Amino acid sequence: MTQKKAKKLGLKQRYALMTRGLDWETTYQPMDKVYPYDTYEGIIINDWDAWEDPFRLTMDAYWKFQSEKERKLYAVIDSFAQNNGHLGITDARYVNAIKLFLTGVSPLEYQASRGFTHVGRHFRGAGARVACQMQAIDELRHVQTQIHAMSHYNKFFDGMHSGPYMHDRVWYLSVPKSFFDDARTAGPFEFLTAISFSFEYVLTNLLFVPFMSGAAYNGDMATVTFGFSAQSDEARHMTLGLEIIKFMLEQDERNIPIVQRWIDKWFWRGTRLLALVGMMMDYMLPKRIMSWKEAWEIYFVEAGGALFEDLSRYGIKPPKFAELATREAEHISHQAWGIFYNYTHAAGFHTWIPTDEELDWLSEKYPNTFDRYYRPRFEYWREQEKAGKRFYNNTLPMLCQVCQIPMGFTEMDDPGTISFRSSTYKGETYHSCSDGCKEIFDHEPEKYVQAWLPVHQIYQGNCGGADIEDVLKWYHLNLGADNLDYNGSPEQKLWEEWQAARVRAAG
Amino acid sequence: MSRTVSITLQNNDDARPIIEAIEEDNPDATVNVYPAMVKIDCAGRLIVRQSTVEEKLGRDWDVQELHLSVISLAGNVDEEDEYLELSWG
Image (cartoon, rainbow over all chains, first blue to last red; front, side):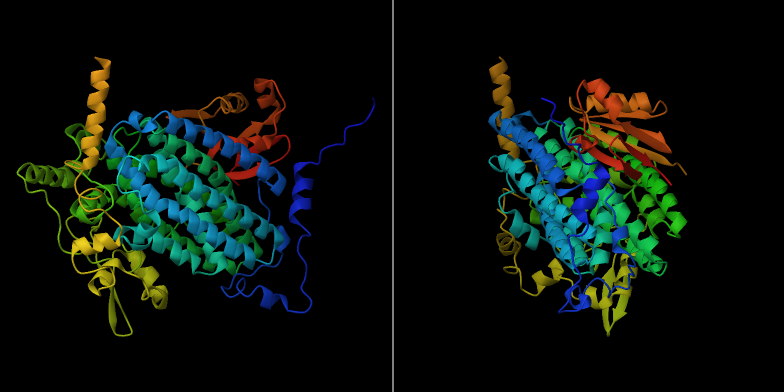
């Protein structure tokens, strides 16, 4: 046989064939009516064909690699469940980080899928539409695999039974929810800057890389596997995010100030959101690999520094409040944990005072701040708890109109003073937690005055009733099981029984 | 300010030959090992070469198979049939 094997197409040819010439110029309707949203933000695109996915991924290769990823992931999820993997984690406290992930982060994957489906429809360039289509499918895969992986924990642990309701209703989950609502209600180019660039490129490393490595360190094979499987898609999304920014900047110099404003806005929105992740890393991983501050140094100061230096050739400056955010990395996780410790009776997970060993680790990792500002607070609360007076804050906090976080963060130069800003719009006063959030409000007040603020909604009687019990019922939370301190929780009791059984079995 | 490019791969059997190939082709790279993952940093640029990975693996290897092992990267991506390169401007 001398049959000659057909030569495979090269990457570039394949990409050109599979992403170009798939679209057409409309004839009986003007293009502007078919694509009504891709011009009103002021972004000028002269040549849509200049859009190129650096990975040159095409649909045929996409299905091949994604199905391989799924096969690997589901093999691990199945064996984790079959082998009772939950017994192998370091400590049941760890699962509380997973609850926060399932209710706070996984629904964002779904929001991202909806967002990319929408903007994919509304770009008139075929390359951009193909990229958005793949990402929309990726994001759907992420929410599904996360729910599948965590369903095993849901059989044994509390607080994971009603994720979608919780995401829509629970007070602290309005922080991630409003972040994506804000992005999805923006124009398509702002959505890409918010999600593809600021969130995926600049910030998600901090969520999916060190935290997932931490999950592995704590014996959680299911989470690390879905985390890294999702992150293998994120690596592609990140690359695309950077490409999108460069695409807009290269198309027309009038795009530069618009893009800069979005970078400033979405960097700040993102750092506020990541306060939750800081807390997960510093307080909720029983075995820790790096502190929030160390992760911030590696993934924002170092990696972000190189990135923004690269973008400086287009006239782009680092995000406006980047320096403030770096100073906050000394404080934010401790302050956030303090807020949740205060309000655990209204939360879907448990909190606790760190052990002595954990407090020492925090002192070592935060030599400038921890012993001075935060250790005394935790030690005081621990004494109160020992005296039978575990402190729960029974007043509702004021929320920032923009990020929706309770206004408990302090001035960074003065950690004894709450950071508090306000603006007046049409005769009403609106409060924000920082210069970053105030600036966002002041630029688009008409948008943010419509914010669904959980505390206001409770006071207006829209959340099931006036008592905490009524509100928890409306949240789909089980009083006495899902909430309150870890010490004394049904979950702690169950975990200790398992450990005792293990000791007995070992003889 | 540092201009480090970086690639993070899973620390598993599929990725190990890729990690070895990167180390061989980028002698200045720093390899950081964390639980479940390996982060490789290099000043300026870093290359993943198909031929070196194939040598380590002992079979054909499509550069796009990298998608199965990669966790994160930093730098501008240039992907061709024979290599993937990360660099800053």
